[in-house]
Length: 145
Image (cartoon, rainbow, N blue to C red):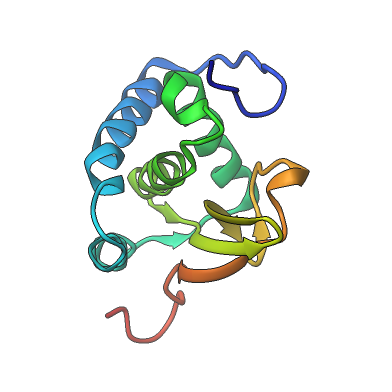
């Protein structure tokens, strides 16, 4: 049986937001199967033109993703969940910081989204990872390449 993240929190997702969340989940699935270089390249491209996401926007995107997808709500689906959350934020014109990292005691890898350096929606037991790859939003001013 697959454990779901946190306590069940039923959420009502409006129809358009539900559709965008489903599309983000569908797009995230094949991307999650790509290698780290490909994932980073795609996310670097997609973040262009987006404004930095607020904590509330990133949390709303994460909640919509885990509401529409039981797979993304599962503990072991952090990569697809984080990618779908970032993609949904992008569909809304924003971008969180997408992160992957590791910890050593015990060794585990994890993927999440953050605003600033603070993870969004992650339970306490999923904290303490050292970021290995991050794709932050581009600055609001200056070169957007």
